[in-house]
Image 1 (tube, one colour):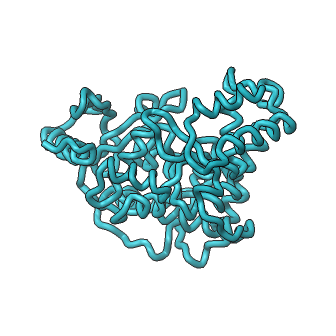
Image 2 (cartoon, rainbow, N blue to C red; image 1 turned 180 degrees about the vertical axis):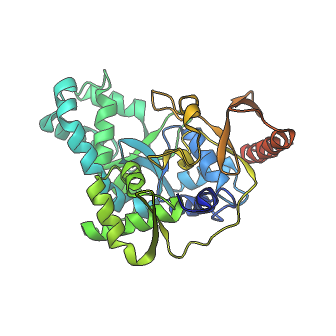
Length: 350
């Protein structure tokens, strides 16, 4: 791998130093941030934003500056508002093609049923205000479109992949949904090559150095399309091949000094989830303690760019640590300093 890979990634990811002054700017820099765990995603944004609090990140979501939807891999992500339409248009169709036969067979959601369900949802959202998921399920049931057995959830997921709807701000613990046209300003569609070119630049801006396999994993593209995206962006990139693997990064990316800082990352953080190969930052024998067979990715503590522990929230503001190796006193102290930053983000400074 390239020299100083972890230092470069920590810098590109906005972990070693916050990458933006606003929550939307941090999300924009990363391109997209995995967000099926809502509260973990808030901290992922806050970690990368100068002096941000949880309230400020949620305010950016409430204003529509950050949008939570399903752009890639069938998984919820946060995106900057201006990136939603082109990214969904480029990446979501492959997910739909992979799921169409299964949801038709198992849930009765064939083309006709999906069209009928879309009419129900669009009518329920026609006022332009966010509607909770449970209220949408009630509308489906009242219209004779059964929402039970995850049919409602899969319908909403499908419509988000079509670009018809996206999530709005939370209502208590419930997600809400809005029509895309009521929440995200229109924009001119991108040609496929232009979108691939943009995707490669944006991915490497927030994740480089990385490989074509990493880009394919993150985006859900085929390896062929990932290579094409990198080739289209090639004039703005640098690359290095070692042991048969080619690593790519933005030509304008600085070469940072090795970071000795210690950080607490949330569950599903892009520092781990954004790459197919996690061994540059996670020792292989510890993989199953961090990334479960069910796909869950634990919250982690990193020292000099490598994962040394997992952690969980204990009570309101405490951190329960599960080290992967023996930690030095200085490392424990660094983790406590990182925990204090997390507490300030939550609004519980002490």
